[in-house]
Picture 1: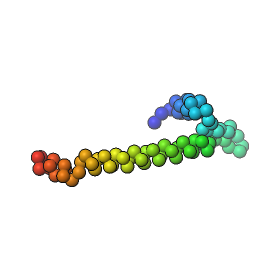
Picture 2: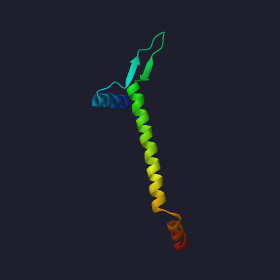
Picture 3: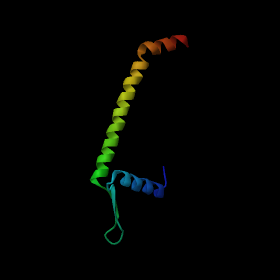
Length: 79
């Protein structure tokens, strides 16, 4: 993991880069406080998750193409 302060700096840097608010904060107190993701941040997270899923699918296709059953059998026969 990373420290709270480093994470906060990275969030602020990304907000500047995107020119968009990603988190909103409310001070604590009797009603509580906290930090919430903006709609832009939720969209960013969803897009990132979609990219990861796509990458996993591409990796599987490539793995299957390069390490087909035929190749695995050749490797097993050589060992």
